[in-house]
Amino acid sequence: MWDGEKLFLNFLVLICAALYWFTTSHYIPAVLGFLIVFLYFFDETFAFMTLILSVLTLLLMIILLFIDYYYFSKGDDFAQFGFSVLYMGVLYFKSKSIFEAS
Image (tube, rainbow, N blue to C red):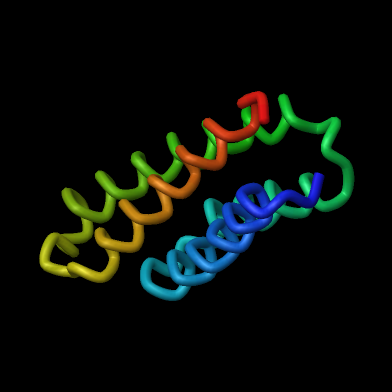
């Protein structure tokens, strides 16, 4: 449960969720990221729920990214899109590592 790769990915999710929340002020994907990490530390048997929350968070982030870009004219905000892509990548690696055999 506490191997290095999973612990590192969980801390990356926490850091990226906090930075995403700070740069975009969208709190729902960040709170879902915190919930993903909390479920892992609480019990590892919630792996499928973690995977569903990861996919839901990714879809919500993509929707919010397009809404910000097209409707609110924040297309020149590099930090917002940079941290969005970074958070998406970290969630992808987190969801990929859930069912990998070690």
